[in-house]
Image 1 (cartoon, one colour):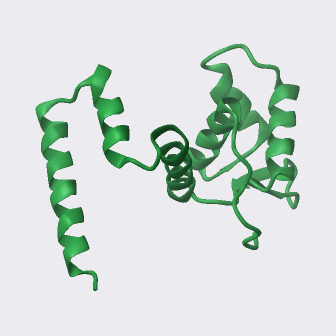
Image 2 (image 1 turned 90 degrees about the vertical axis):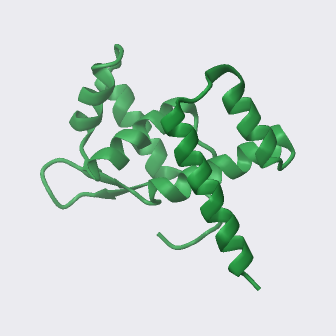
Length: 133
């Protein structure tokens, strides 16, 4: 896919479908239907519609060469997560990383292991920032 700017926002259901695609790399309608059906009742035609719309919006690429159409993500999960976080950070927290982290920790808390990993990531980010001109 050529870079035509940011992809349109995903609904929660579309993001759930994209998670299945990212997890498997390449999927058929049946693959996605099985994954979603294990969580709730969903019609196969609904899954086909979701995949078609995601393709139309630029999120998926369809391969029609085989018996069943296969879909793969047009954008990697990590890039999409970064975009989603950036949008959330700007719209809900006015760009404040601290505000986001405080909101995440407020009700959930973290384990000692998670706290240690976060401290290590913060230390690493600070070291990288100091190296930049």
